[in-house]
Length: 570
Image (cartoon, rainbow, N blue to C red):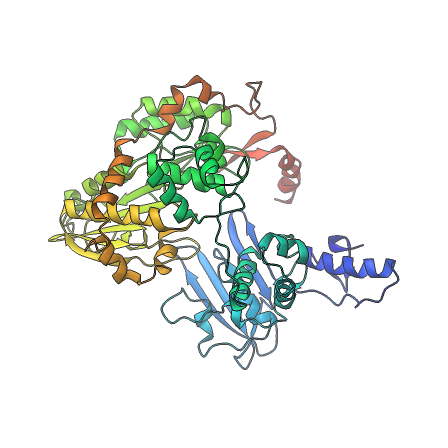
């Protein structure tokens, strides 16, 4: 017996790595070979529970005599971090992470390899800032475990490279690293590339096996050559005949950023991921959410009633989001066209909540209502959202406009933030919440309306042009050579002579905007996609519903057997 079927010293190990460790012992026993007996296992792991990232490392509860803890709570992002160190304050004993696992790999290496802590141990769990300690792949010892599932160390990776392995896919095959849970993918890539560079080997930055180019290079090829289909780009600059799940979404995003054609067109649909394919966010139970655009959070009574009518008719779970919108959950695939037909008739359009594109422009009520407001923040939010709605980019974009320095719209945590002054607008860029919270940076001050829009045009198109795939503006900005001063020189001073070109490219996207759902509803062929079964209009028989806090919640058939048990326990 191995894994969760086996109890050792009264303990059961519900992780894959201890199971593999036990399996190695069983295999050795069956083959009459000697092997180290199982002596317990490191239960460090990171998981996603009910949509929330959690991580546990080593002595997470601080039960070691003399252990001391550092804790950090960020209520704005609903994240919690606890670092447990030994009595000397020199080594990590364990850690707890809730809401943000981006610190996991670094803390795990400190614990597993007894790496000496910095002078201020708390800096390891505080938000990143200038001068914060980092643990790069070069600082890891040879014995450092990179893949805990298969017990692959940095030394094993180095041995494979010394043996001639210069391909990441081949490295995974040879060492089994990243073939278990996949949680070590980021660290494995960093170590692999660092060791190749250290040996004087050039690192291949190809997007994938089909394109020997980076995302930025492919963007330039599409823009300069006027490429409008994936097939054309693959034929001219790629290899193979079909592409893969890496290059297809990346090229699909590039084509949308450049030409803004309807993503449901027959030639573009195969490039989209699940959410874009059905123009809705798929939820964990197989249903979808519907998010109509509510520019700037401003909505009429009639439109509020229309949302209520739709939610009641289709029995949808409703929730007001942090971006001043109303989310409708629990829609089944075949219901999406009918729901959107009613919403569009009421004056709504798609909110692009499913796309790597402009999501929301949050606003306060500004000078129209607020006694502190110095500019009409609602009107500016409407202007910005109307201009950039539908703009596809390497990652999602969030905006906010505050009517004064009291910052009720929280503009300084957005990709693009605008704050009113008595003389105009202050522009902030490259902030975001989420996995790696980052405060936006003040970019320009006291701008008039036209100049503000011009700078945002240039900033967004320059980001789209030069960022890597799935790279937020914050990460892109941190890796930008020359930093904020360089970016100001490009956008404000037009040091590269790209200003007019970036503005005209943005204007082309703006001019071509069309509500994607309105476009799909006009085309019977596109509507055929919205069926659970290709040849049958029946709904998904595995989706069921229960009542929760006065609203209907979807539940999968497999969960139905748990309901009597839960009710009995309650």
